[in-house]
Length: 42
Image 1 (cartoon, rainbow, N blue to C red):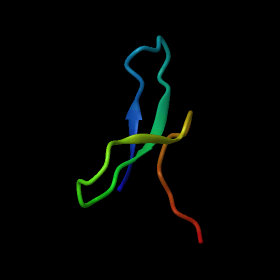
Image 2: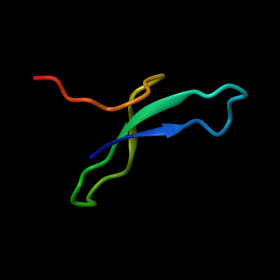
Image 3: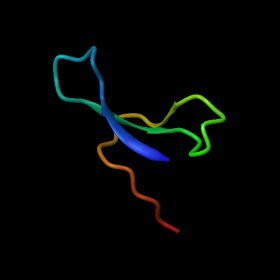
Image 4: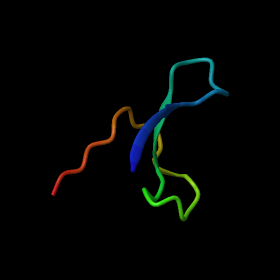
């Protein structure tokens, strides 16, 4: 699963795209730093 999340420690609105396994087996991780919205292009 991909999702955008606002950085809490910034003075300006900065977001990152995070990834987490949909089955709950892993921990969230930053996939694309400084990105606004997740989109998969194939």
